[in-house]
Image (cartoon, rainbow, N blue to C red):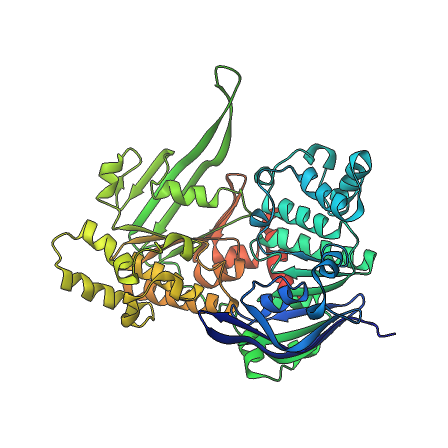
Length: 534
């Protein structure tokens, strides 16, 4: 009997929309042995996720399979009936998705969601189901699982939610686990914990795993073999270590060299100060009782000092919930805070919304998710020009259009694309549009909130190069918020390490990265760079 649990043979996947058919995957062939991890690697749009969804036949009705077979323990999934598929899904093959918050039901408790799987597939209810739920939560490393049974997804951290998703996937002791970018949205330390957990569970349960990612460092840490996908083709496959040591295909070489490179400009203590904060605090009240009295505070930002100069980048790092984004929102006066904030010499902490409006063109923000921050109903030209119509009312339509064209050219986009809409662009292009919207107003300061975390590795490197180039040409001051230390290392002169609202370490980028002083900073460094070096 074959030791291969999954065999993909000459698989092609096509989609028919409005009478037009396009092929997304072309003749893919690979297999997974029992107890083995195989990674599908490639950039967005390469065909990784639709290949994985095909294993469970979860693609929409528009999908078809012009050629190929998907054999699970000898059974062709593509020819299976709905009843046969129902027995395979959740029992023999399970899947973990990229974003647990959208995969978990916000209206149901954690216990109900895991127990539902046990009842559906094993007929397990009541005390037996609760006992199994607690076992599963313990297995995936949820502390005090009895106290978390009645928790809802929004009451758990990103790492805890992903652990719950893994518990749900393992509930029926499957033979094959498909993990679709399960660590992309997580902090580096949580990412390392989840990868370690998956390896432990695999060894303990004899799981086979199909791991989908665009991060080659993760592949090196977890996969026995990997398949590199580009434009729907598997261009290279083999043992992971061999591919890393001696890649054969040009695309594989491109992916391996795609990490953000270069160094930030040298710190210049003589540069004018753009932004300064002293003893900055953002405390959110905790109210209880019938009279809703304040009994305590969540100290999201607690007594922080910082200085940011022209042409310099301040990197702010830390795990989710450390206060990074709250700090950035307070500095740009998008939320209120206590303490002193001086912007180009003006004390702005007591400014009203109306007073701040006069400074908005000088203080810009680029958000994490460009798709969510760009209006789907406006063309790219309208999106970029919107700030000009508010802050530069003296400009006529032609002058505004000229500035939009210049901003698009400066961010590496074709000016003709200004007539198109955000959904017509890739993630990297949308982030360039968001950057163009910020720079068109010629600001002095830009707050960049995780601007590369949702992007492929090669696109990340391009955006970092773009930001560095814009900073040099425009003498911009950046505040760069990220949990990706590789990107921070490439951009930031100064670094603040935050934990639970406080600064645990602060200094030059060289000092923080080469000689971290606190255990927390050392743990962040180990999690970020071990993934790339193991």
